[in-house]
Image (cartoon, rainbow, N blue to C red; front, side, top):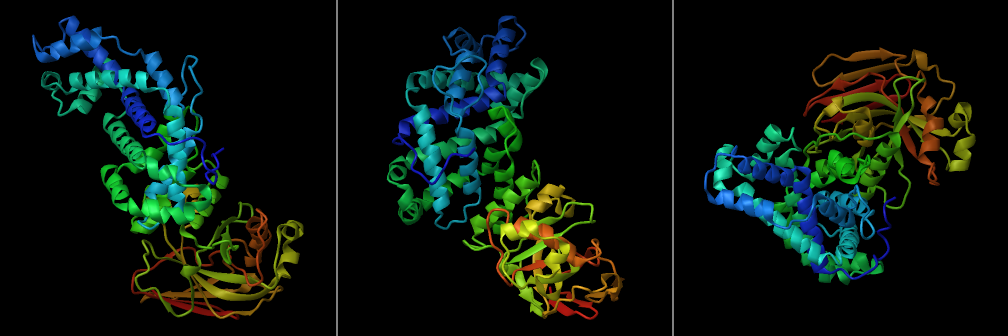
Length: 514
C-alpha cells in the first residue's frame, strides 16, 4: 500500500543521510551488474597468471583490491535492505525500508510527467521520498564510508587502461559485460544499470540539495509553498532532468521486480508514459499491466494529473465491446476533445486518425451507485432521453499503436482521440437496430454503407455496465451525461485534411474536418 503523501513525513530531512542512500543506491546497481564479482574474478585470473597485464599499475590495483578489508557481500546486501528495502538473505541489523519502492516510483512518475509548471504533487512526492531516505540513511555513515572506499577501489580496477586493453573495452562498463559473459555466465545489462545508477544518484543528490526547502514544506501549505520552493528551484530541477534522461529507468518494471523481490505494479510507469506522450506528442512504449483494475487506475491517475474533471464526475464516456459475451470496456473522455458537428480539428495532436461511426446516448436524470446496481437493460433504456450520431477519432499514445496490448489500450482510454457529437434527437427505446443503416464518407473515398452492424446488436446494451462502472466509487452521474456506444463501421482510416461525414438514417448526421 502506498504511504499517504498528504501528511507530513516524520523526521527532519538530513542531506548527509540522503548522500548515504545515494551511495548505497549506486552500489546496488554495481552489485546488480555483478561488478564486485567481476573485480574478484579479475583478481583470481591475475593471481593465476591468466590475465595478460604484466607488472603494471593494474596488477597493483588488483592486489590492493583483493587484500583490503572490504565489506562482504552479505554486509553490502544488509545495507541495500536497510536503505532500499532489497530483500536480504540474512537478518538485517535495523528495519528494512519497506516503503522506499512505492515512494521511489511515485516520485519518478511525477518527475517524468513534470511539465515545468508548479506541481504540488511533485513537491509532495519529493518530500515523502526525501524524508523516507533520510530516516533510513541515518546511522549508516561509517558503513557507507567503507562501501564508498570499496566502490572507488572497484572503479580504479575496472577503469585501468591495462584491464580495458586486455578486453578490448572502451570503458569499465564494457569490461563488466565482457568479463561477466566470459567468466561468470552473464550479467545484467551494464549499460542499462549504469543509466539507472546515474539517474538515481542525480535524483538523490537533488533531494539532498533541496533538504532545507523540503523541510519547510507542511502538507497543509504544499499548494502555496510549492511556488516558493519548487518554483524557485526550477533551474535545478531542469538540470536534474538534463543529467538524468533515463528517469524512465527508475520506473522500469523488470528492475522493480529484481530490486524489491515482488511483481511491482506497472501502473505508475504506464501513467508516466501516457503523461509524457500527451505532453511531448510523441508515442511511448506500452508497459505490461496486471489486469483491468490496473488499467482503470491508470485512466484515473492520468485524468487527475491533467485535471480533466476536477472534483466532478466525468460527463462524457465511451463504452463498448466486441460481442455481448465479452466484458464491456469503459473510458471517461476529456471534455476538451468532445466537439460539436462541423468542428475543424486544426492542429489537434493526433498520431492516428481512425474513424468509428457511433450512436451516443444521453441520460435524462442522475444515477448513483445504489440505483445503478439494481438496473437491468430495460430499466436503463428508460433513463435515456436523447441520442445522436457520433464520430470517434481513434488514436494511440503507445508506440505500438493499435497493436499495443489490450490492457495498455484500455489504460489509454481505449484508444480515444476525440469525439464529435451531432444534433440530439429523442431516444426510441423500441427502435429496430438490426435495420439501422449507417453511411460513412472519408475524404475522396467512396461512401460506405453499413446495416445492423453494431457488435452488440443494440447500442443500449452497454448501459447497465457503464452505469455501474461510472458510479462504482460513490460517484453520481449527472443528468445529461453522455456515453458513446461502439462502432458500426469497424475502424476506417483517415488522413489529415480529410472531411469525414457520418449519417444514421432516422437519427441524424455529424461532420468533422481533420
